Image 1 (cartoon, rainbow, N blue to C red):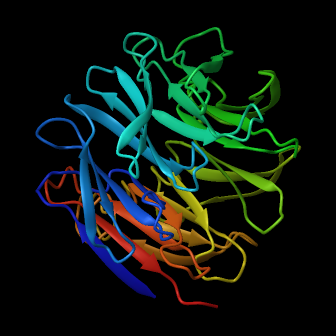
Image 2 (image 1 turned 60 degrees about the vertical axis):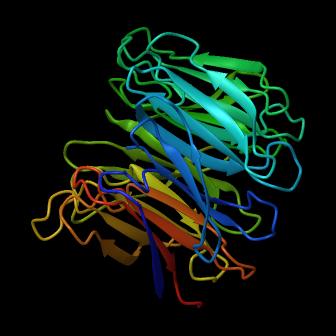
Length: 375
């Protein structure tokens, strides 16, 4: 196992709040993108090459931010990844920017549709209309507007609004749009949209046809079901697996469902953590055996009486067994606050980024880069 790290520049910078991997400069090697949120004004992106050399810092806003999410995707089909940034501000307005690092320009700029909607709290991307171009999916859970929540789908081609989804529950506090994902579950070449609504009396996850807009499936669980959703193919040419986290005061747990009919595969929780388990999640082939592992963060978990030290767990996708577990070093490290997986070199093994923003510790944040031994 090899562990490297990148550290923020200033105390209390929340370096590592969000992380991503992608080839954003077109050099054929993936870069590491790291968010800081606690800047004197707004937040910023910091970009590093695969050797951890700092390439550039980019300011994101001129207002104080609440949350920043980032993912990478080749939106304009130039074989170079763009950075999709979702920002919600402390005044609960929000915006989403699709930024080309290579061209040094913003390709798409989307803004809050309603006041206090927390637009950009969650983001995802997938080709929902079948035109071959990834589209942008934006959650706006409307936290102080009864949490009814809305999700907007924008064309990756020109930024036009393709579709809008609203909470199906005729009551407030559903938190519709708190979590998002996209995947082609039925093999028709168009991605479906997965939307978590954990605030319902029985938490719900909806799977919609992005192109037609109709509801295809609805999964129901306990209160808090849908606080996080994640989808991936765990084996080459395999069907996508949907993972859903339930946020429960008695202990978070993760449920896995097999597409296309979403029958339950397995469920697992954490023997050490009561709250926070599964609120960050990723999948990737970390050991190079051709099968992806399930990576689960619990950033607010204690360790040896150290509050909010955090932990990250690696599980086998075959039987759900625990393969590795790492802990935050200090109290309030928030280890596992962000997770990202991807290749940093030409080999076929994924690397894991683990963010420890240490925001409440008021120290410089850290991003760990983990490479497991080849099987």
